[in-house]
Structures are given as C-alpha cells and as structure tokens.
Length: 348
Image (cartoon, rainbow, N blue to C red; front, side):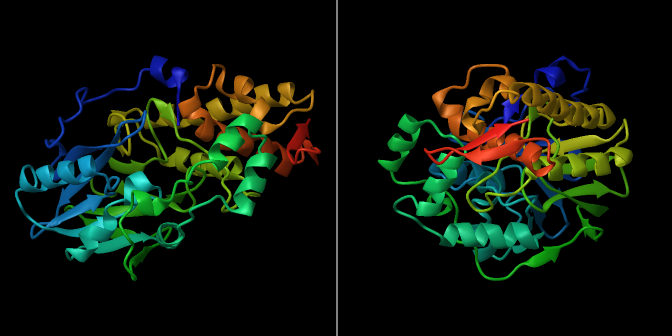
C-alpha cells in the first residue's frame, strides 16, 4: 500500500478524526464498534469492527497473531465488548493482518464466514510452511526483475510464512457469495465481491442505513496494494481491480460511511472511487511512456510511485510494479521478452 497524495488533498470527510486508543473502541453507528489492533510494520494498525448481535458479537476481520495483537484483542474483549462472546467472524479477504487470529476465535466457538477463495487461500498458505525459498519463488522474483543483491540477501534468510503470524485455520466455514444478503448487527447487508487487492474480496453494503464495510478494497488516504505473487504469477490484478471499482462506482452515495481495513472511516465514496480509478489510469499512462525504452518491473518504481522506495517497502513495490507491467502485457499494450538473467523485459 502506498500513500495516495491525490486523496490526501481531496475533500473527503472524516466524522471520527481520532482513532481509538489500543484496548478502546469507538461506536461509529448504533451497535457498531470500531477498534484497532497493532501490526509490526510501517502500516502499524488494522481496523476491526464489532457488530452487536444481542447474544454475541460479529467481528469483521481479526488482526495478526502477534503477542501485541493477542493482548490488544483480549483487552477489547474484556473492555468495550463487555466480556460477551464472539459468535461469528466474517473475513473480508485472506491477508494475514485480517485472518491472523480467526483460528483461535473459531476454537472458542465462533463461526467463520468468508468467500471460498479467501478461506481456501488462507488455509493453504497457513499449511504451506517453507524453510527455504522454492524454485518457483526464485523464478518469480527473477522474472519480476528483483535486484540481484536483494534476491541474494533473501535467499540467505528463511522466507516469510503465513503460519508465523496466523493461527491454523480449522476445517470448515460458511461460504459468502456475490449477491448474497447477510444479517448481522441488526442490519441486512448486500455482499459485493471485489478483486485486485485480494481475490474474491468481500465488501458489505448495508440495506438499512448508510454503512459500507469495505475491508482493503476501498481505503481513504492510501491506495490498496495491487500485486502479483508467486501463487499466481500470470494474474492481472490491476485489470480485476479496475473492473471492481467501475462496478462499485454506481453504488457509491455521498452519505455512506465507509469502514475500511486501515486509516479512518470516511464519507465521500463517489469521489474516492473516482480517485482510485483515476490514480491507476495515471500510473498506467506514466508506465506506457516509460516502457518505450525496454525495462523490467524492478526498473519501473519511479514512474509508478514517483518517489524513492525504501528497503522496507521494496517487496510490496516490486509486486505492484510487476502487476502494472503484467497488465499492459495482458491487454496487448506491451510486449515482453526474457533476458539472460531470467527477467521479463517489457516494452510498449
């Protein structure tokens, strides 16, 4: 995820300008509590929403399984949630900061609801523990144009595994589909499935008031990371994400309160949807010009991000750069060839 300067300058409205302190919660609508759990990265939080079902709570996402995350969730459950049990967990998507503690909540009796892709991907990745990088991963990083010194450094380390920061995902879940209507938190919710940031990413649009539970599909002041990964190296998440944004745009209303997975709840969804669409078209236009001279995805950071990329951001920047280059290849706007070093070389 990268900072979206266009969005920062825009006149989105933030009804709750101060985030809840750790262990605390803010009621953003009747029966809807917003709290945060810590993340050990630059984006240092994930937003969690608890919706009151009377006899228990429905949680939207779960945070990452770290000592700090476990302690913060315990504080919220004993404090703002009043010790009332969590009866249902609804996942927006499969990323570890959203599914990390789903397993322990299920073992405590919560039902798990998710799209099929989100559940199966999370379960597969938590079971797939690797102590060294696979040949497929090395090939992927080379084709993305990862700098040789960065790749060499990675190969000396144990790779990241979902199981490091996610509880095991128990067998069995309730499937969520596009077009479903779910009832929780005293409301009926229309399910609309997005893509791009994560495959089959669920969003929930209240049919009874102005709330939208958006996960990471729609964020206010950062652009959701859209990357290609070794699990599906020929994917076109940029194309899928633009399709979802254009599909969601007609549903956007000025008074909707959007509850996203990061940053602040906001109002002004029609404006934000147009910004997100325009931002990526701008990226693609700059990339088309840049690729008049052949380049690898790893050589395209400047036209895409318009700033220097730090070492801590390199991995996310690379997969996003790769995704935009792949989009131009899949749409026939760029050709690609394989260099002697194993990298894809793109040219418009």
